[in-house]
Image 1 (cartoon, rainbow, N blue to C red):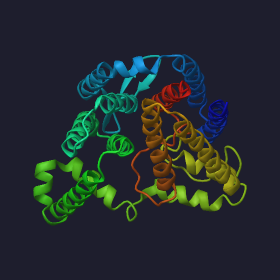
Image 2 (tube, helix red, strand yellow):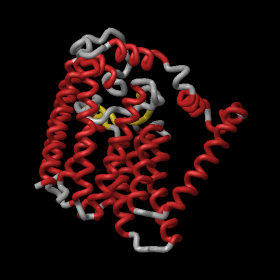
Image 3 (cartoon, rainbow, N blue to C red):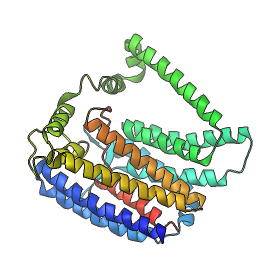
Image 4 (cartoon, rainbow, N blue to C red):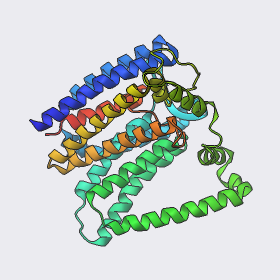
Length: 356
């Protein structure tokens, strides 16, 4: 009965997310096409939830390797025949449907293959945990490289977060994480030394494009540009109740995707911000409660993988909208415009709703 209440609360939150998303997208451009597509994607998403929740999750895990291999083949094909938009090959363009971003669905594939590996792991010695760690890292690196080459650094970060959090929840020895942390810090320091002190050589090895991607990330607060400047300005000016739907005083590029939070904050002010953040917390909490109430390991791993994606994206998107975090192109789950991300989330919700 308690699990049923959590599932009902999740669906209720999704309905409110849908309303908020439509209102915010309407305010970004008053573009009927965007609104229509988002409504269609949400409708398709709710149908997907109904379909997926009735599937056998164990059979899905059984075919995890097949799903994983197909996903990586698609990511590879994307680099070869994908449509380049704004300097990035992240989408397939399907006539009459629109753009599809395979990396969004690769997150699900990675969660499934991680579960497959974790549930098959039998060793109890330290060396067995090390082997498990490298197995998980290997299946993470492959889609990570293919996605990085698009380039899409934000989703690559999500891949590794998914795997590391799932390993932590699985319970591998903490010493492995300590060694990993020391190795990462050392590598980052050496990388930074190379980047700042040997820039010409850095460009010759990694290329101009990668150099400027790092430069934008490091200098995000100093070279914020119009997006962040205008985003912060309209949030500050919104006051307690905002300017109302459709009344956005400043132009923000990609407002319907990356900067949807600032548009919503501008329209509904501090009251709207508190309502949205409260709704997000309620949504995340009910998913977390499902994980706590199930005794099956595969369900726990599924939920923690999905929560890792959602919580990271929520923090990153809101943080970059208010100038606390670098701009990485991460969207706000269930609110930002976009079919691939929304449908991938709905697939995960469908799987989670199948928890008993």
